[in-house]
Image (cartoon, rainbow, N blue to C red; front, side, top):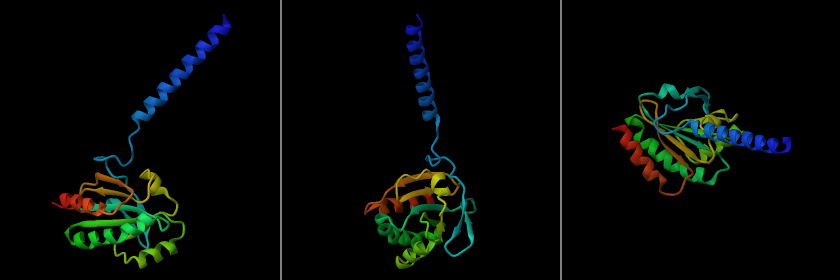
Length: 172
């Protein structure tokens, strides 16, 4: 009798564990879900001082995660810079969060690309983990109230047109 009960018990235990895992996974809320509050962070800027996301409330904020080794990131940067320069006076902030270990290389690439928006340094990847990054580049657009409105993963030519439409909508 024990030989038949033990497999049934193991099957029941495995089933219960699977249900618990499935429930836990479905109950998890991503850190950057649209309409959720954007996770706050503070990072050093490439120029030295710290910058805190929460201090940008009242502005439309684009947070763009990038790396020097990422080709699409380098391709996207001049387009992002154009948006920054066009809408900055209207209350738009663009924060480029670089995830490289070598901050000198990040500064070199940003300089070559003519970046004028603030570049923040996430060398320990804490903010990247907070925002659950899985793709480079990743872009999060946050409204004036500090809520995530749009999340973009990756970059292809033409994405900047969609970014611009979303920025204009949130600036109204």
